[in-house]
Image (tube, rainbow, N blue to C red; front, side, top):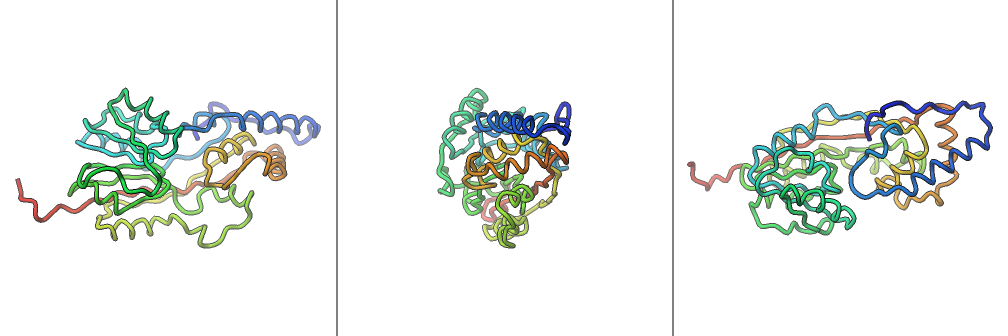
Amino acid sequence: MTEPSAPLVPSSPGRPQASSEARFEALVAEADAAPVDGWDFSWFDGRATEERPSWGYARSLADRMARARAALDLDTGGGEVLASVPVLPALTVATESWPPNIARATALLHPRGAAVVAVREESPLPFGDRAFDLVVSRHPVTTCWEEIARVLVPGGVYFSQQVGPASVFELVEYFLGPRTAQERGARDPQRARAAAEAAGLEVTDLRAERLRVEFRDIGAVVHFLRKVIWMVPGFTVAGHLPRLRSLHRLIETEGPFVAHSSRFLIEARKPDDPSTPLR
């Protein structure tokens, strides 16, 4: 989600309910028909905003890519983030599991000389040991630390921005009700550290932030829940009409619905191989 060119103005609470219902139906129909493939959030321009983490993932990614010889981008989505990198290594490979994203990423990345490999979620990576000196991922579904450690060369680096615990749970709980402590604690960055270290990697950087998110109309909510499918599993407009109508009225009378995303940055290095002679 990006900063809007101009904020939407909430409707006056004094307007007739029929007008509000007409707006609701139009906004929901538009959002329900919009394509959700790829990882491009430009549809939200003017309709939703999300603060960006202070560390600047894309900028840091570009710097690391420029110095790498062989790089792997896991869960590339539609390839949008990788395609934004000015200089790619001579060997650049991306993986993706969702068929619509595979086609989109292929069209976007092949002209840049990057290969896109279709994989199954949580399956072993189809690459040999010590194949890459840089592995990256932005918002991976899962992180297979043992496989990352396997495909990294000694001295190689894994660099990733990930979704942290209880991200946008204000919206999740609006639809699903209170979540358990276990659900709220999932994706804890300290657990990521422990898993990386268990796989033999040295965590060299770990930072976390919570960031303000605003949904300025009900269409933005619908599109978000259709696109980020793990937030409200099985979400459909038809199955959630009462809560959608209630949230539409809330936004029109009180202004944007505010939530908070959770993000963490993790960088981990594979130790040098002591058996490798110095050059």
